[in-house]
Amino acid sequence: MEWLESPISAAASDMAEEELKRVKALLSASLGAYPKALIERHLRSVHLCGELSFYGLKFGATSTHDRIYLCSAGASEGYTDEYIGRAFHHELAHILYSKHPFPVEEWSACNPPGFAYVGGETGGVEAIRRGKDSLAGDERLYAKGFLAEYATASLEEDFCVYSEMAFGAGEKFKAVMARHDAVKRKYVVWRRYYLRIDPEFSRTSAFRMLP
Image 1 (cartoon, helix red, strand yellow):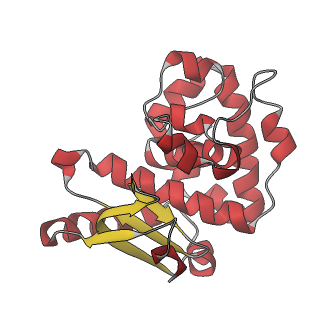
Image 2 (cartoon, one colour):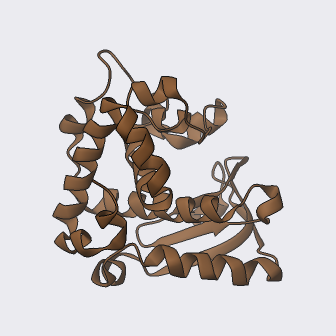
Image 3 (cartoon, helix red, strand yellow):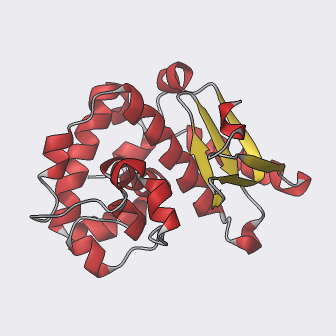
């Protein structure tokens, strides 16, 4: 209920009926990237919305300690199959990050000297407010170890963008990693973290396709 109060001022709309079937099928496929026991431990439910906003800003997805809220207004509006899958993986990464100690120093050591995340304590919210929320990558960012502009918002968002790419765009991610050692260094930290959470990740198809 506190989400309804200012300054969060949360608002949401229903997902269109024609979208529900598509998104549910995409979620079923995305869940297959994880050990079943991990999902049972960490994810209670996924709530589907047409639109979602907080702090007067539109969000494509968000999460709490065991629930994901996911939006789609249709593929023609940018909510493609890949976008939906990546958004799910991104939010589940937030949940895991909140529950399992993350190797902050090891990850930070992979960043360029003197680098500071732009979002500060508010992370993704501040990045969205400042218009630095693009999920499109480019060679300039890859060379520094970042997969998208939004990844520069906070260390947590950086990690979550790696998760959405590794699980939701594996072949594209592999190609980027093959070209950039800075990305490969973070991937090594990322992979080790997931295997510490659950060694069964080594048996999943998503992990087997990655080096």
